[in-house]
Length: 72
Image (cartoon, rainbow, N blue to C red):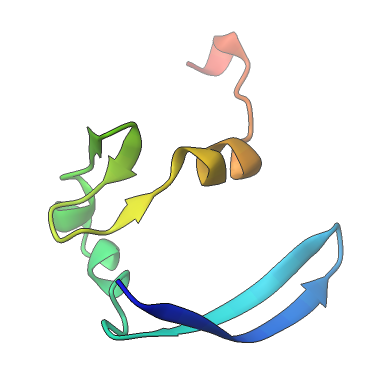
């Protein structure tokens, strides 16, 4: 899939805001549908959904918040 960053802004807490342009605009909007969202799975070590949306393992590691075992 082709994509380019079209806007980036620094945010507090060493975060950035990013907007991208790609050939499949709005590809993640489908995830707002709870029935579709619940079809989450794993493919080649990445979190994926049926229509090729995915979250790479390195992104998960970078964004992950640990939950203590009492809340599991």
